[in-house]
Image (cartoon, rainbow over all chains, first blue to last red; front, top):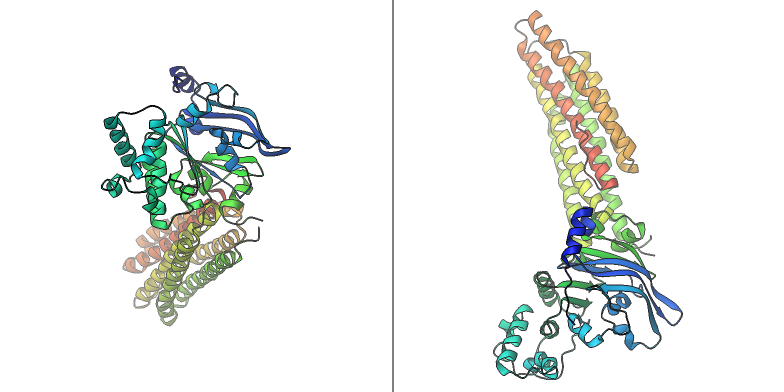
Length: 275
Length: 219
């Protein structure tokens, strides 16, 4: 696929319309009336959200509110659940990625995902990164070496592992394993990173490193993160969406959400006064 | 909305101590003005000494508030409420300083030859005391319409001070040799007027707490 997300036409339109701060950045993913069903249960209800380019968007809300379902739909992970069904559109690069003719493998290279629990392959650090590349036909040792170094540097892991690239990835600490999973995703040269609670299984130091990394990565990528940690959402994200019972209750600048949210439900949730 | 009962109780405890702090500041102001009219140096000294206790109130409120911010990591209204606590407490502390300054002026006046104290100063203090009580109510009830009205009363105090100042200038012509007394009385008027400004700031703090926006009421 040949992607050109930032069509100049859009930029001009934004200027012409003099969009408010809510839309002051380019939208990389435009979610329109997205509903996701598991059987008869509507887990996400007609969600609308413009996810900004080179920004961090945090999805917050209590367990079972639909945020993980939402993030998983962005790279079609819900396809793996037989009873699931999606309605509406997620426009990426002018294409509705929910269309049945979208090449899901290519899509997942563009929109990479990292999960809550680090899940490196039981292989060397080096091979964790090169596995998918080799599978895709990249055999050139020099090119692979370069991608390994670049990805590990971007994931802020290079200095810690450069002398032991051929040791097992499982010898790394949890935080290092998680950064390796991020490096592995970055090796595919994605445009968007989806992080589903990437730091919740980590100690505070590893957690801080991941947060630091997220802030660095947004220079080059657009990031969507699900987190249960309110302070993490407020520290790393530019935009925050609050989900409740499958609805996007409020979606706004993070500083607005955490200082003066518009919805009472949001206020109750972020203040820990739910129920 | 029942969760975080301990946090809510802690917030309420700080709110209560700010309210009693405000009543103490009002008492200090009244005593300083009583001392002025009664030429009562003992009472003036008590006000001066008592200021240390009021400073301590401010420190305690600051400490408790900062501790809650650190331990509870509040957001949204909770955070704004705690920031408002810090702002209100600082203003109360400055108001107490002005009451102390009035008491100091009383002591300076009491070593000079007696001079008739203009009734306008008592009138100013009464309006300011009324402002303190309205501010306490607005703070307790988080009532922004009461908070906004503080600015109207402050305008009254400002014009009363302007009048006092002009009267003093006129009298100065009449009573040569009493300019030290007159200076001190203008200072006293000025201190009372400044207390009014701080109460208006408290009104702004309440508006910030409730609405999340900063509005200048001192215009």
